[in-house]
Length: 96
Image 1: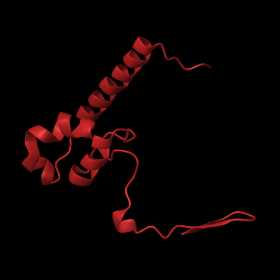
Image 2: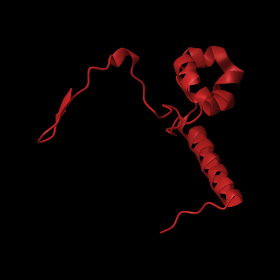
Image 3: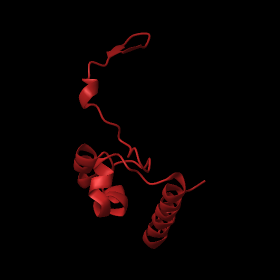
Image 4: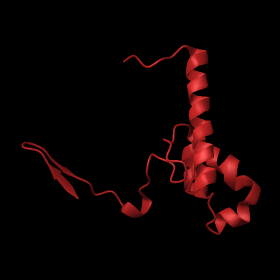
């Protein structure tokens, strides 16, 4: 793939077999800690998803099982609430 600008040509010669996203394919959150990056290689999910869904049913997970849409939405809602609570504790607020 190449992307052309008026003066610059970018050529992506990355081996797509070893290319991975910066987002967890299960929860869609960004990978942000070292454990996420090692876990994505091993289990194809972030560390939080592994702890929440995969670690207690490794055989099913390794066979391709993933949480259903409703369970995943509840999990993502809890994760959003936790992130907001941490921002409140730290006093970090988005300025509009």
